Length: 413
Image (cartoon, one colour):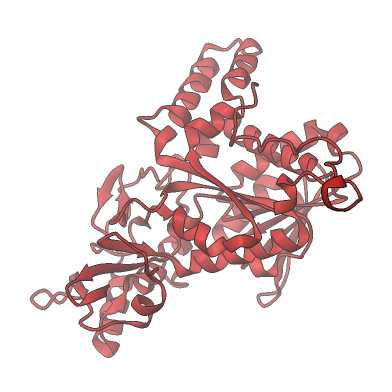
């Protein structure tokens, strides 16, 4: 997450709320702290602020270059084709931001109408922020209507290219059916529990009031095991410090279950690691790292996604691909060839420079190329070559071998 604003220096209401809560009930988990700071309905960071874009607190890959969204769009179409071109195609994004990524993908879908011909395509956005859902509607929909506060679908509309589009607060409310799920910089903002290995076993890291400065917060170790420390940690864990998002695990289980039963795929892109990192919880404000406990509500809080945990939560019902670096994924998807096509059709020096700079930002190992990881969930049938009818040794493979999974293998583009 790239921070860019110094304007919000204090948010005393969140701090007062937290200190009152801790005084009344004792130290709180890091997950509860994150949930209050980011999504408190009155003064949470995500609720009060428009965090995205040049004037907000961070800029995401889809806003750096249109090529990013185009290649993800091609990935979606590729997986739909490789799955046998099912009649229904639901495009589902979790936490769509301003709608830049889905907007670029819809442009690709429109350009590939001849490929998608006959498919019933619909768009489903999972968004909890009222401000961001409003921005998404303005960006993506030619027309839209708002539902009631308690309705599962709280906004509906039609995209500029004529596709039905729906908004939900939870992924569990999205209809069943063949779906391509996208989660770009979604899992890194979900609340985490933090644990420390001690001589007495695992202990949970909590947030408490500083004993000498009542308007400051500090981390403490809970003296005895907690429900989270006894249920979330895998028995084979070797690390000394752990960060686990049970909410992320539940969401991945939901995606895996639906993909296994209805077909489809999920593509997750985020800051992350494959079970190697330990203490990654951090805050960002004004282009700089920000103390996560200082001035709560004024900075973005994030933690790297542990893809080994997501893989474990997905279980055996789906096939997991990755994680691989963003650089490898985009190179495999043909970003260099796409850049050359755009440069050949672009005669404006400023735009050319922006395209080159954008691709460098996305793929350079020193920038986003290595920090971001791509991870996918696929239905097992996607990678299985069907058998001819028959029994025993007489059975033969029927038809061509499954297509390679775009982005996760070199396709020679």
